[in-house]
Length: 65
Image (tube, rainbow, N blue to C red; front, side):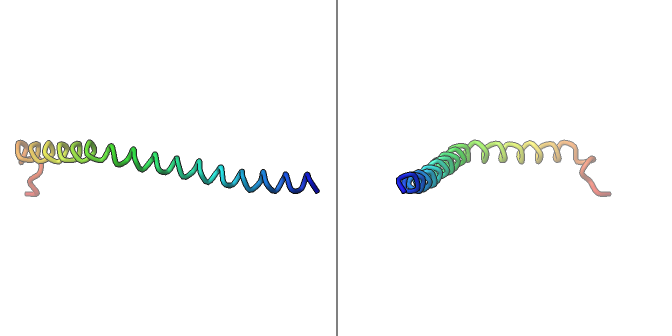
């Protein structure tokens, strides 16, 4: 009976531990994504600007006629 109770307690604490590890991992992932968001927006804006400049300088490549 003692072995059964010990097994159940360890089983339950194992799930609680895994829940905590997963929760911490997800939280850190979200924080990393939020921290990198301004840099990603700047890169996207820079890429859009460079693409627009390229299209204006090389209009003969983008002209459908």
